[in-house]
Amino acid sequence: MGYLFDKIVGCKEKHLELFLIMQMVGVVYSEENEDTCSQ
Image (cartoon, rainbow, N blue to C red; front, top):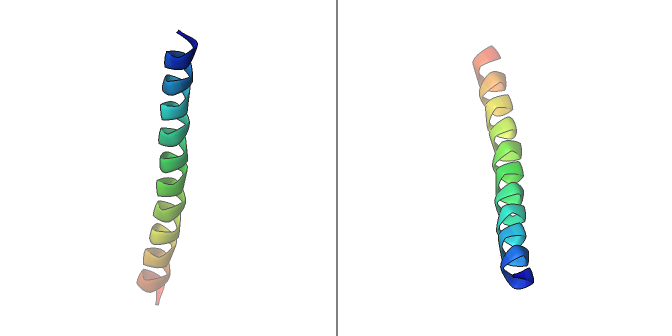
């Protein structure tokens, strides 16, 4: 039971890390688009 719980928590943490990375990349991408549009 403990092993399964750790596995689920580990998966959620991985998804959270991936989500945060994608968010940061998305923010950078949108900022670059705004810069090119304003020129």
